[in-house]
Length: 585
Picture 1 (cartoon, rainbow, N blue to C red):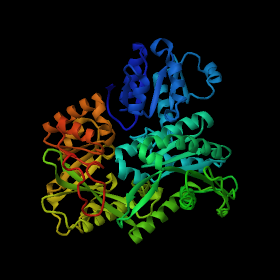
Picture 2 (cartoon, rainbow, N blue to C red):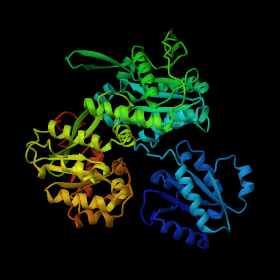
Picture 3 (cartoon, rainbow, N blue to C red):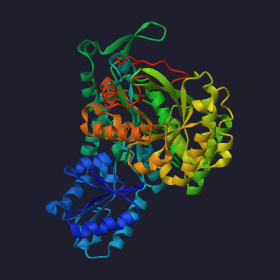
Picture 4 (tube, rainbow, N blue to C red):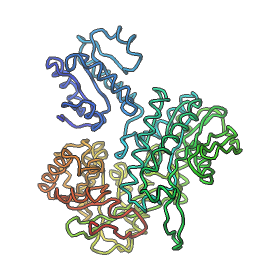
C-alpha cells in the first residue's frame, strides 16, 4: 500500500495510466486528501483501508475497472463507499449501470472538475463506514446514522435488532475467543440471509458485542428473521462440546454457588417499523426495541417479535401471543427538532449525572504488572444510547461535548481516589474540550489525592487532525503541569508520523483493529514493528489495545510492545478490576 499526504478523507485511486494518474494525484494532493493506491488484491485493499471514496478508471487493469466497481457495489458492506467511474462515454454508461455507480467523470475534461466531483461525493457520503474489527460490518456510528437517514426519508422501513441469549454463560465456560467465533458466525449468517432474501438497499450493521441491526422493508422483516433464526439454530450446537450439545445445556454455578442449567444459545430479533405509526427519532426506535427484547427474554429458544402486529411468533414452540400497540407521535423531525431533542437528552444526563465509569487495567507486558487504568464512560441504561460512541455523538450534536467531557473526568477522578501512587490514570478528552482554556482551567478540580504525574490525557488521531496547532499548544501546556500525553488509535493513518513526533507523546496506543488477530497477520506485525522503532526514537511507550487471546498477547510481546490492555487481561469494571491473565495463562 502506498500513501500520500494524510487527511481525514481517504481516496483510493485505481488508475494505472500514468498520463491520467499523475494529474489526478497532483490535484488531490493539493487538497491534502489521503491518496491510497492498491497493490495486487483490490478487494482486500478496500476491506483493509475502508476508503471514503474510490476513483476508478474503466481501463484500469486491462479494462477491468468497471467490473471491479460493480463487484464493490454488490458487496453488502462495501456498497456504501461512493465510487466515481472515469469513462469515455458516461452518458451511455448511466443507462446501463443500473444506478450502481455514484458518479461519472468523462475522460478529456479538466481534472479540476473531477476534484469537484470527488468533493461532492464525499459530502454526500452520509454513512461513513466504521467497520467493527470482529465482523468487518459497519459499526455503531454507522448504525445510528443509517437509522436517522431512513427516519428522515419518510419511507417505510423496519429496523431489526438482533442479539444472542446465553452468550455470557457460553463465554464463562468456553472463553471469550470461542464466543467471538459465535458472533462472527452470526454476522456471516446475517450477510448470507440478506444476500439471499434482501434487497440492494438493505443495511446490516454490528452495533457491538453480540448486537446487530438490519434495516430493511417491513414486508421483508419477518421472512428475513425466520431465515436468520433457522440458520443460526442449525449452526450454534456445533460450537458446544459433545457432552453439552447432547444435554442441550451447560451446567454451571450461579452467583449463589448453586448449579443451574444454561440453555444452548438462541437469537432474538425485535422488529421495529413505521408501517402504521410514524417514528420520528432514533430514541423511539431504540425504546420500542428494548420493550420487545425484554418481553422476548421470557420465551424459550430463538424467536422474533414485530411491533404493533399483535403477534409474537416463536419458531420452536409455534406460540402466538398478544402484544401492546404502542402509540407514537406522527410527523417527521426537522434538523432543529433533532438538535433540540439531543440537547434535552444530554441535558438530562448532565443534570442528573447519569453516567457510569469503568476502569480497565493496562499491563506491563514484560513484568506482567499493572501500570495504570483507562477510565471508560458509558450511560447508565443498557441500550444503544449508553454506548460511548452514541453518547458522545449526541453530546457533540447538542453542543454539550465539553460539559460531557468535564462530567466524565470528574467521575473518573472522584471514583478513582484509591488509585495507587505508582499507577497512571488514563483519561480521554475530545478536541473541543482540549483547546478550550475555560474548561481546561478547572478540568482537574476533582483530582483530590491523584497527582498530575499520575494523569495521562488521551487524544485520538482524528482530534489532532482537526486542530493540530491548538492541540499541540494544549498538550504542551498539560505536559508543563506534569500530565502525560497519549495518542490513541494510532494505525488508522489519519495523522503523519512527523506530526506525532512534534506532539512528543509519552504513550502511543495502537488501534485495536491493528491488534485483532495479529498473530495470524504478518503485515500487521510488520506495521507494529515499524511503529515501535518510531516510538523508541521519540522516547514514547507503546500500548496494544484490544488484546483478547493468548496468541495476540504472545505476538505483541514478541514484537516488543511495552504495554497492553484488553479482555484477555480484564474487562472494565469498578475501581479497580483484578487482572485475570497477568501470568499469560
